[in-house]
Image (cartoon, rainbow, N blue to C red; front, side):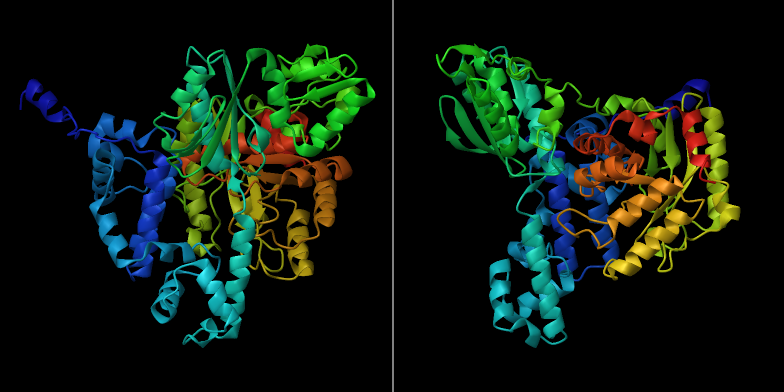
Length: 600
């Protein structure tokens, strides 16, 4: 074969790409795939097929690029390169991307009543129970289910009983409590996207998030945006016709409300440029923060509202164009938005002693990332490339250890193989250091999978509880304390075990945990995965100020792209008043290794 023929053979064919008629977001696609997984579970399909759709949904939700962009560049083959997306799923995605609908999804919806999948959101109700409840009682909603439980109809379903009925009711109450608010990770991306688009418009002077979203609370009640403009009608026209809009709830001269295509309500208020700082301060601070600030102003003969700062006796306007102007008139530093909860930040700002909070740019790497070696989606090299793209100096591969069989935990032999692969990659990638690690399982006695002979080979050992969440406070605490005393465990992973919207924190003696961690030099993890954020902000501050604990911020990423969730961890660290000195990720790699070895 001639050289030209060989080159022609190797040349890639241009991807076959159909015309895209409608734009659909990654979140919408992920939700549809999850719905398909739920419905397949209900109709009794194999668990393999169900998990395949869940995995694809999780992977797409974690992409840092629009799915549409990936398709336009590489067609179906480009979609197949997404972790967890096989050829069959890729073809379904192509149909969804190019037509805005999916025939297979529509067919499934004819077989499974849509509300039935909502029952599966209740902790303790899987597809089999949901189907049995529906087939027996015709129930499709939570309110119907509650009524049936009150009348003890559920307990009479074959195979259920009073205990099952009690557990389902507990799950419903838990679900309702946890879904009163929106996860930060659901609200933040769409709000950020809209704010960035607003800022690009020539008739918009400034635009920002406001409310609890700007304070980066783990859950938010609503999505409030603020803009300044001399042409508010143009802003309203633009906002209510953006591609992200599903429908308009209300449109006014200076305030409008829309429902985004992901189902969330977003409100935008427009003010004059000279009022913007006052409005931003007013609509950002928590109610207690703003009340405290107004009381402080009143004592100084001033009054503060969303329009500015005024002399209380003459009504003369003294300022309000910027937030710094508002706080400056009161002789204060400007508290970072993440601190505006009236938890001491006003007193510290008056004394000009606010801490310099950790910033995303301070983070030099991640200690908790999973790969294909256990239950992750990506190869180690994929993780390395993402870490380099984030500007990191290190990345730690911390796959599960062998006793967590459901997650494909590594045996000692597999761990040795992985260490060899990491050593080879460290030779190839000089700009970053790949640290070796493991996420070991803390058993009922507080022991972990491996002994010193294996753990001593690793740079980082994370100890985590993965089962027995309903054990007594005494036993759970005892397990964690035993792990903390283990000289080879550097980090306690997701210390309270909570999963927002799914599982409450387990009952442990936090003061005892904090005291032991500080005295042994064991780092506590702030798990940055959006539905964990564990430890929470108040716990972080307590552990730091009252016990002297140190922390790591980890994403617990099972998809390499999820390493970008570090942003949520850093925001939570700020809310916990943490500085870069409190967090191991901010140090140089040589210092990190030294600090990790000190416990041993």
